[in-house]
Image (cartoon, rainbow, N blue to C red; front, top):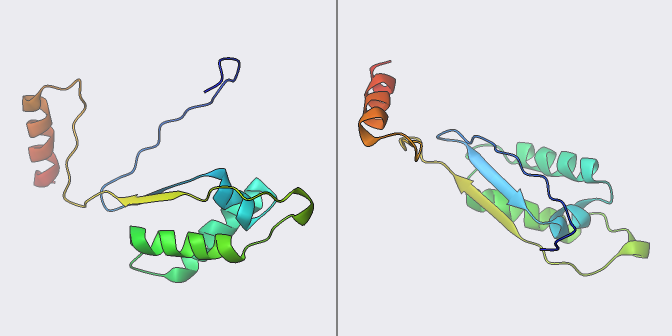
Length: 114
């Protein structure tokens, strides 16, 4: 976005059956002033929801918490609040874009045999 700005990147693996969540800083800032407590509050609220923790429920809980979360009035500004939640289908098989299809099919067959 800005040539002089450095951004960190990381790769996370989301396994089949797991839910991934990505939020903007508008969510974390609305939940708490301190980023660590924002993560703790979000994960705590999601843990309290119980199963099944669908992407829709994740979004509902996060937006509800952001709407009623802690706000630092001295530093408050109206920021966008965006959340993306997704679930990797339990029966979904992924292959590396570098792996030829035959290798991916063998890996799938091996995984099913276990």
